[in-house]
Amino acid sequence: MYHYIRELIESKYPKIKALNTTEFIYQIEYISKNYQFLTLEDVRSAIKGDKCFENGVVLTFDDGYADHYNNVFPILNKLGIQGWFFPPVNAVTTDAILDVNKIHFILASIPEGENLINLLLETTNHLHKNKDLESYLLNFWKDFNFYDAYDRKEVTFFKHVLQNYLDEDLRIEIVDYLFSRFVDEDIKTFSSNLYMNIDQLIEMNDSGMVIGGHGAKHIWLGKSSENEQIDEITKTRNFLEKINDDEDFVMCYPYGSYNDFTLHECNKQGFDLGLTTIDGVFDPCTGYPLTIERKDTNCFPKTKQI
Ligand SMILES: [Zn+2]
Image (cartoon, rainbow, N blue to C red; front, side):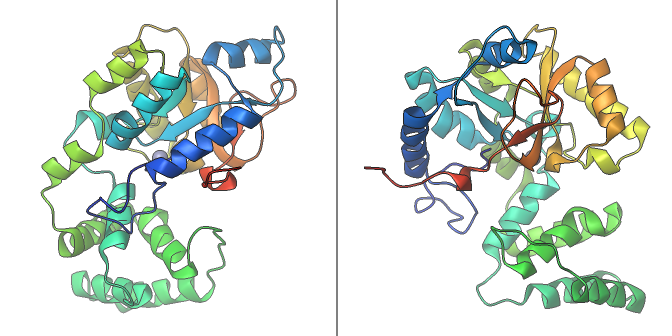
């Protein structure tokens, strides 16, 4: 599972959590030596029991970043490896920046040493003088015990609060305020530089890459109402139909969030495979194709292996 892949030193936001393109190349070398790259067709026939593969692997890329077209696609194309790419519909078709990405760039732009908890409290107080809200946040921080192997506790808390803990309207208000305070870039230009466009996706699809679904607004499907989920999944399917004329598609649940209804609706709308963020290795014989486990890029070496 990959997200940003870019040369960080040359980039405007060197603190963004990204894999360097050179590290990606080393990983591809390592994976090529130890695993065999599978295509969508291979995975489907393994699930049907028609074929068996030893150490099969698929590279997946979430969120539709322009990094994937500029830095990943040329490498995979040259090596004849099929990558699976999952762009959210709105990232590609609107001028908006997804909240999840705004939060990444806020975190990459906040000066070193800034206390993130105080910043959140100051911001909510600045926007809404509300003592209840302040104690709500402080209590959440006091009891906060989510563990994330890749982030400091304050960063994990900051992301949780702004990605799903507060009410949607308030989250959006805070994220927009912090984005204009710390990042301060034109949204439209930033969005078109950050994400791929539909022509690039069609080009990648036509070159043998897989373009799958990652929702429209990139929301937590597992926490959304049934109507909201139907809307998200329908928009995803309609979008993918503009890219190719396949019958079946692959879904990748944003934030890895799904519930029984998500699986039912995805299945109904012709998604035969679903990717989660559950850490693990999918077994085509025993696993359920709509809840496929994945490994994070951080699980693999990033330096040249001798
Ligand atoms: Zn995502």
